[in-house]
Length: 618
Image (cartoon, rainbow, N blue to C red):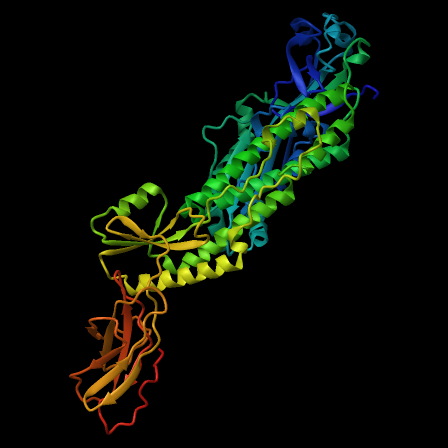
């Protein structure tokens, strides 16, 4: 390609007139120059250029950030692969959202001060011509625009029930009010109550070339900083830092110098950017799942997410390292664009494509939602998060019985990274062949099995019913935990007695059907039924003269009588003549009682005509 002058942002790098620059790597060459210091100092053309600019951006993509900083496609590619080390306000480029629920608006403040350029006298008199033979640089900095800029990033995390798009609009409106603050006076801004509440829940991150005593972290602090920015440059004697530089090709000064042979195609840069944006989006989804309460409650699930996160980060670094090797070679003419295209094709055969990662994260999201749904009715119970905590509860002398609802399928190896792809040499050799398809999911998710789902629903129903029926029993402890057990996929109820696991597939007694009632003289004969689950060793009969309700205000006590065994016939005696009684019963096992059956009304007064044996359901 023909040599041409270039204009690039400094991005916090110390680029000054006379410095050498290598456009193949987008890096400057320190300590080497074409002129001595005196020539550079004496023949510099300087102009004052005081200007101020203010911009706002609601998007957080790299393209939008690059547009704010006037970054070209070529320089953007160098940043993407890690060739460019940014500093100062340009660190804003590295600030990415950490959550998919994050709303963001950015304010950019730019203040320019002066413009410096080399003169033709310097360009025509090279002090150190041997530099051209070294071929370490392609361009020389001939002009610099100085000043300072600042980025204030305003973030708000939406709740699950909030409309993210609507909140983003309100956030943008609140941030755009900042320039309306008065430089003098109290600097107050007119806002309604809703805007004030939003402003109080905004976090602020500051990236700037200004020397502040303390960076703002809140909306209110950002107002104070904004008011002081114009004065900051005056306090720094209007010096500023390099904001923008102009590069002159060395081949126009000496044909022996190194040159930029070709640029990376814009199409390939866009594809690379899109790929890395996808990797960033999956990282944000993973971060949200790691922070979820269900994930914290079940360490096996969190461990899988942390492993996925580490693999994804390692892969991203490997991919960027491959790009950092390729780009200088393509620009220097020793490799063709095809090499970059081949690298992108390798990505498309890896486990880390957007479709693969989304599928895996979708499955984990489904697991989280299932866990949340299944445990929503058990919020009062302890969720055990480690084996040590489980042991301390099981060994506690205060509890004769510990009953644990165990989720057994949350821990499994679901990463099938054959040949350890993310650390392989495929990016080095550009080898697109592979021994079969890569997959992040080695086994079928447990929740896709109808049999496992049905078994889980039954176990959770039994556990919930049994825990509520025995919640006042001090010697019984009910807990929830994640305990891997491939022999009992989905869930199991584990029974510990006297600190020993006695049954890994315990079935508690459950709600029996209503009793059948026969009245004779002052005797009442009850026909009882054993629990459909678990082992019934006896029954607990309960009766009273007031009708039961589901209300928490129902505090009338029941008269309780335990049977001596599991005989299904039982006679109630000694009842007073009354208008009506209600009777119910529970199945009793060795470790607890079941939920009570539905209540049945009956009367001991022969003058009343009551249809006995008909259950009463509250």
